[in-house]
Length: 46
Image (cartoon, rainbow, N blue to C red; front, side):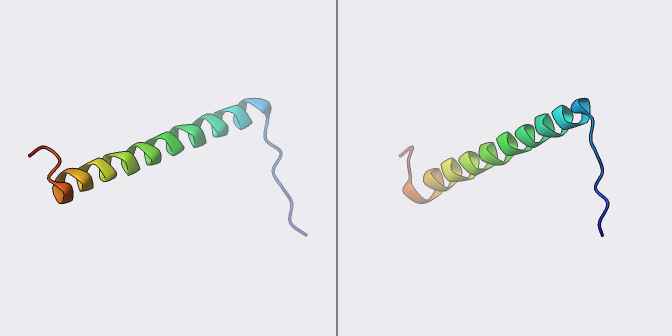
């Protein structure tokens, strides 16, 4: 049987905040790569 670790409310909040921050960073990178691709392939600024 696997014993699970009980997290305190502070730890849960901290983990959630960290996950949200990571998600925002990943989404930002996706947007950045998309824009770079549009500019390079599409000749967006010409």
